[in-house]
Length: 469
Image 1 (cartoon, one colour):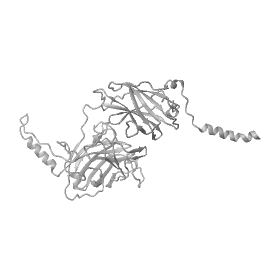
Image 2 (cartoon, rainbow, N blue to C red):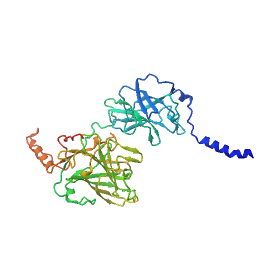
Image 3 (cartoon, rainbow, N blue to C red):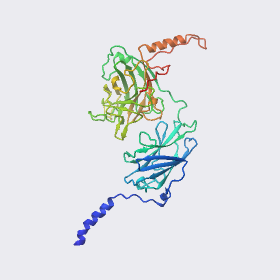
Image 4 (cartoon, rainbow, N blue to C red):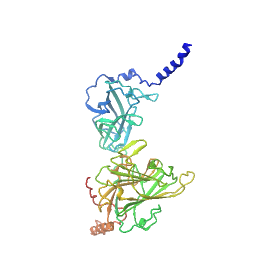
């Protein structure tokens, strides 16, 4: 009877013992990558992760890298205290714009996965020991920037261990190294990347007689600047593969920026609750505006506005390129910012009904200048230039007014179009001046013809730089 009475206790004890996660013991192979002290390193580092782990240095190439080249980089890690938990190493190779090229999650002997788990993760490291992390990297066949960077960190689920000391990026990854790309090694990049579009946008003087109803049928819209058709966001070529196409119109007056976007889409999807607040519209169908008010700034203090076929709005303000940013579910930027816009959408088809063929949808929006609180001046002064881009999106991809060309994601403001705010009649005056300057005989002996003015023209002079804040 006593033995029987003890059985439940023994079972519970065994179960409790089994429930504890025991870190994997290092194999003999992994032990060869454990050192009692760090060797002399040509590239010493002093990167500290939350006072618990240090990246003390690395060995790597010194010559410029080439596409398709195989490269060996060795990182040297040291844990200062027992970590526990489920920490793993994270290492990314990114181009100069921050676009990820290679994920090196399990590309070394101490990271190699067995049964879906790393061979010897940081959670099992012994304090004081140095771990040799040999990474084998094959460079992509195409790199569109002249430099690449190696970033590293520690992750547990959606949590990144904070970088307490050392250079880091906005995603809490430490900057380990920067490597130059060999001259002329851009692979598949076009010989000459297309310039960003220039738009001279004439001010609408007097009352603007439009009704925000998604129809774009007023005389003012017929005279507005025409943008598009949008292009392949990666190449800048006409879109022939993405299932969505678009074109747009734009105008401005003293009160607001006015945008109308006509989207061609054979299957219009909304898919969100009618009362959703800042829903993730980019995961389905939506249009997107990116607006950076200060031309001389580099991806700072910019704004994102999305409007979907249901006329739902996602709007946010960003301090820097993709900063601030939470985990996979956000928040994305300062979502408490509101564009205070007025918008309307007309769907030419049936929304959320995939067994028929739609034509698309039209978005009309008026965005008050007062909403852009971080702009140098609102409304813009005549001659000011802002960076603006427009997208028509589906499932987190899309077509664009100005292509990004793989130099980052849709937030890369250096690839946004340049919009210069000019007075009414400016375009005609420029055309007349050009005609006067070219009135003399051409090389062929025939008179030169002045270019025809239009709503979207190349701005012949650099934009007036905005004063720094």
